[in-house]
Amino acid sequence: MSTEIEVDQDLAVVHFRDEVTLEAVESAVAALCSHADFRPDLPTIWDFSSALGGGLDRYQMRRLALNAGEHRRGAGRPRVAVVAPKRSNFGGARMFSTVGADAIHVDLGIFRERAPAQAWIAGHGDASPLGDAG
Image (tube, rainbow, N blue to C red; front, side, top):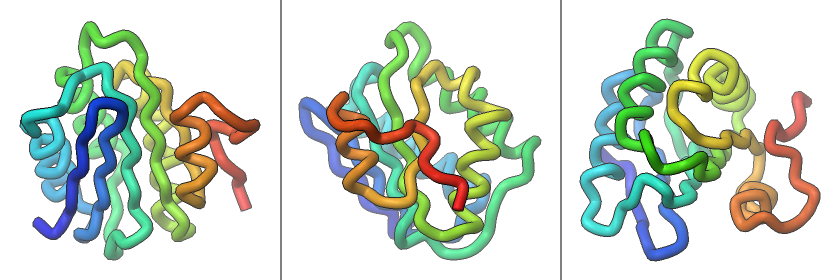
């Protein structure tokens, strides 16, 4: 797995650099949740800027959401931002927000760029949690 995970007391960042498959994303979720400094209430940025091709269908997205939701249960609704500048990943993230966001117990924001995602995670600025559709 070439995905890199950074966790500090205020934020977790997952730099996803693999092909977007169910197995790869589940592996990254497991790595994040097993990180020594991870907490279920920790705001998180999933950065797919360097992700390779691939994608998930809606059934895989729902399965992923249900599995990931087990790690966030009881943590309130922390903010999780997805940065997906590529059209295919952005569309997949938007679809995930409709089929799985309720199961993961988070406020989910989808963005094309990292700066608006960071502002939204921090509660600053006017960043839209669903980004733009363009």
